[in-house]
Length: 252
Image (cartoon, rainbow, N blue to C red):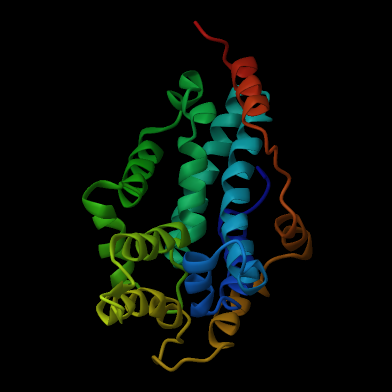
């Protein structure tokens, strides 16, 4: 990781995410909300993208916690902050959130000796990026920023699904045996975001437009980098991650 160019890393992550996101159909969000898990075969692409978000978060934690020396750990965190910024610039908010959440995870954030060595300008950048993940006022900072971004772009899927679930659970589907069309219109507006994010720069929908947009950058990334990010090495065990964290910086 320390030898890789941060922009190339962000491109590799974004291109992988886009191949999944471009396959997601807006109906998958409806299936996910109304009939999960019975409809698992109808939400394959959506499930894979959600899984990838979790994997990236665990990958960030794994890389940092497996880094044995303080100076290299500091360099690694600086790299992840830059990668998060690049993902935001490439309009991949799903991966952006995953990286920030990985750095903010308790097993990583408790490494006080490591974080105090991070240069001020990187701390400032990280603080600015964190602002976008602030959940206050119903994630207003993220929603405002994302609304201004041009398509194609990848939204933070867990929040979109939370919005749809809130609409579904907070409103009855039927009133006196009549369909509550107001509720269905609200859900339709929410799931339509998928189609809008998959549009090309001219505003015309094309299933391949986003792929070509990101593939242009992906061609410049080496084969080794692509292979590395196609299959991330992660430790998917919170207890193990905390043990690694305490091994690096024992409790005072």
